[in-house]
Length: 258
Ligand SMILES: NC(=O)c1ccc[n+]([C@@H]2O[C@H](COP(=O)([O-])OP(=O)(O)OC[C@H]3O[C@@H](n4cnc5c(N)ncnc54)[C@H](OP(=O)(O)O)[C@@H]3O)[C@@H](O)[C@H]2O)c1
Image (cartoon, rainbow, N blue to C red; front, side):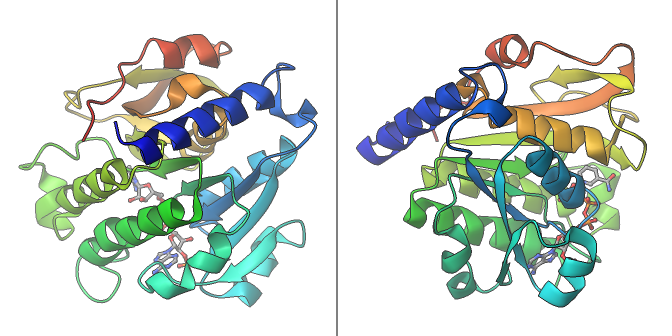
């Protein structure tokens, strides 16, 4: 492990430990500041709302602040930027302890195709986070990114292949990270089901999870150093909501060093 990566990891562990020393981050004396990218999206918006509810300071990187204000209100700090424009990312990273990205491509070709958003955009964010000394980067990726023959690749411009390249760019950046690979996203209410967390990307067939439940896991991942440098698949099944996040994250294998 490089020195930079090791000191960033130690910093992230200290932060996570102090944030949850009282059991919940909302009671922490110095709330963490989190930059949310994709905050106007259907997963990003519940991420912002859950962060605010838990007492974090939130800054967002958005393409259209006027449109974003209508959804996100005045409790967040706005930075105008675009993940395809690396120079626009640095100001938003300043002061951020952590980044949560829920960006996603629009369409299978054109300027917002998967290659540009899910790979180059994530890579640009990871590089900017590294340059700014961000201590944790939580990425919403997707289940099946390692399944090259998955039909979604044929349907949506190799979206899963590009998402895996985005994940790899984050792993290589040296920023401590948590990569969450949800199954099929829905817009149901959060907290109604139990989480299934797996590794190895072996699951085939339909899996589902509400976007707001994905948001819950993004926020929980900030609170426990056990979530650092882990990649895992995520879906929900009927059952009681999970309570012991630390124990569940601790069961996961860390990724091999890139
Ligand atoms: N659909 C599924 O079943 C499924 C399954 C697994 C994983 N996922 C992944 O989960 C993630 C979240 O999905 P979602 O449906 O919640 O996303 P979404 O509602 O489509 O939101 C996408 C967000 O990305 C932002 N964005 C796009 N291009 C950008 C750019 N160039 N610069 C800055 N921001 C940009 C959008 O901002 P604007 O408001 O400016 O457009 C929006 O806030 C995505 O990565 C998606 O691929 C989806």
